[in-house]
Length: 456
Ligand SMILES: Cc1cc2nc3c(=O)[nH]c(=O)nc-3n(C[C@H](O)[C@H](O)[C@H](O)COP(=O)(O)OP(=O)(O)OC[C@H]3O[C@@H](n4cnc5c(N)ncnc54)[C@H](O)[C@@H]3O)c2cc1C
Image (cartoon, rainbow, N blue to C red; front, side, top):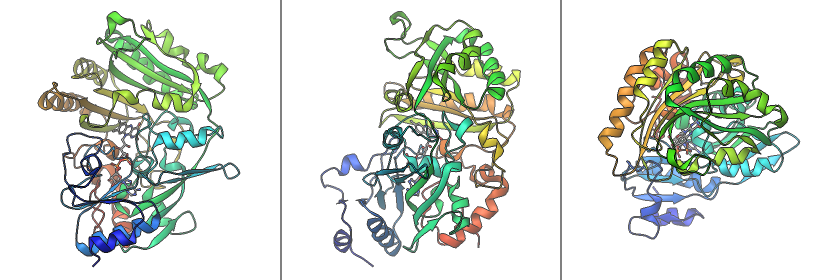
C-alpha cells in the first residue's frame, strides 16, 4: 500500500490534506448543503496521476470521490474521510475538424468545451449552464438546448479513455471494450474514471434565441402551446419551459424585478435568419412581457444564466421523465410551481423528442427514449431562505405532478441523495449494467455515484 508521502512522489498534481492551503476551498462542491471533509484531495494533471490515485484509494480501502465539474446535487464529488480525485486541471479540449470530434479532459466544463469548439464553428449537446462538468453530464445522459437536433450528449460519445478500478487504462469505443462504451452512454460514473471523452460535433455557431417571459396567468396557455409546438417543430429548435422569478436585469422592467413569470427559453440552431419564424408560435400564444432574444454565439446562451446558479448555493432536486402532459398535469404545475421559494428555484421541462427518440431503448444505457421531456424541480437558495421551506416546495410540487409523468424513472443527473431510483431509472437495461459493473468494478470501488450494484 502506498503511503501519502509515496503518493505525492507518484503524482505531478497537488495533493492537499486538511490544514493545507486551499483545502477549505477544494473540499467544497457546487451544492452548499454538502459540508464534507475528505482525508486527501488529489488534483490530477494526467492519466498517470489518476492511476496512482485510484490504486492508492483501493489499496488503502478508502472511499473514492471522483469529481469532474462538481455539480452533482447529492455531492458525489466530495466525501468524509476518503480521497477526492479532482479532475479539474485536466480540462484541455482538442478539436479534430476533419473527424468533426473534440477530445476533452475529464475535468473540462461546458464553458471550456464550447470555448474551444466554437472557434471551429461547432458544438455538441451540453447543459444549459457553462460551469457544469462535461464528465458527469455526459455519463448520466446529457440534456440541453441542442438535444432535439443533435441527440443526447451520451449519444455523441464516440470513445473514452477510462482508468478502471484495478488501475488499468482502457479505451472504450465501437471496436474496443464495446460493453464499456454502451455503459458509459448514460450509466454514470460507475465503471471507472473517464480521463478523456471524444465527442461528435455539429455545425452550430451562431444561434437565434434567448428567453421569452410571460405573465404567470398565461402559464397554462403557454405550457400547452409549448407542448404542442415542440412535438412537431423543426429539430434545430431547442426550447425549455420554466417558472422564473425576475432577476434584476436590464431587459426586464425595473418595477417587475422579483415578480414571478413563466418563461420559454429558445435556441434555434438552424440558419439564424429563419430563427424568428421558428420561434413565432411562442410569440403568438400570449403577450411577451420581457425578452432577450436574438442572434448570439452559442457559448453566450450557454453561459447566460450562470449567475443564477453560483457555487455554494444550497440545493434540492427531484426529476422525472414525462411521457405526456395532460391538462391535469398542467393544472398541478400552475398550482404548485409559482411562487418559487427563491430567485433561482425553478421547474424546467427539457424536450428530448426528435433525435434522442430515434435511438433504441437498449442501444445505450440511457433507455428512456419514449419520454417527451426531462422534468426537473430544483430549489437553489441562500440564507435567509430556510432549508425546510425550499425542500418542502420541491417535494409538494413533485408529489402533485409525478402521478401524471407516466413512468417511474427519473433522470439520474437530477436526483438528490434521498431519491433512490437507480434501478427504476435504468429499467430493463439495469441487469446488463450490473454485468458490465461486475466486469470493470466488481468490488464497487466507484460507489459514490448513482450506484449500480455489481452482478454477483
Ligand atoms: C446549475 C446546474 C445546471 C445543470 N444543468 C443541466 C443540464 O442542462 N442538463 C443536464 O443534463 N444536466 C444538468 N445538470 C445536472 C448535471 O448533469 C449533473 O449534476 C452532473 O452530474 C454534473 O456533472 P459534473 O461533472 O459537474 O459533476 P460531479 O459532481 O463532478 O460528478 C457527477 C458524478 O459523475 C461522476 N464523475 C464525474 N467525473 C467523472 C469522470 N471523469 N469519470 C467518472 N465519473 C465521473 C462523479 O463521481 C459523480 O458521481 C445541472 C446541474 C447543475 C448544478
